[in-house]
Length: 86
Image 1: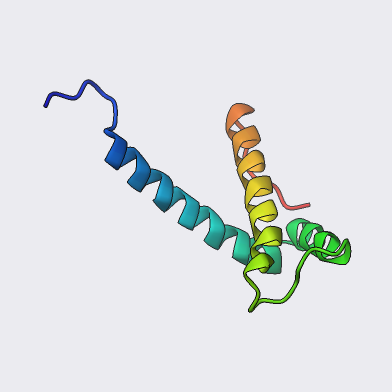
Image 2: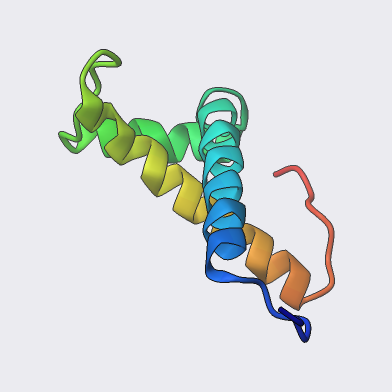
């Protein structure tokens, strides 16, 4: 099969899985060490989002942080800027 620059379905699914794992790990670190995202995660937990680490619903906060990271990264790329500490 000749490919013309497009990924096959299986390749795309594997790539998306890798990106999701990396983004999740980045959110885990950022929610504990990045001051702005740490405050964001704390605000979500204070609103009543599940905060028990043993509970699978703990991922609600981490996924919100991951989404925020993705939006920040997309904005930085779009505006051709670099990350600055607050």
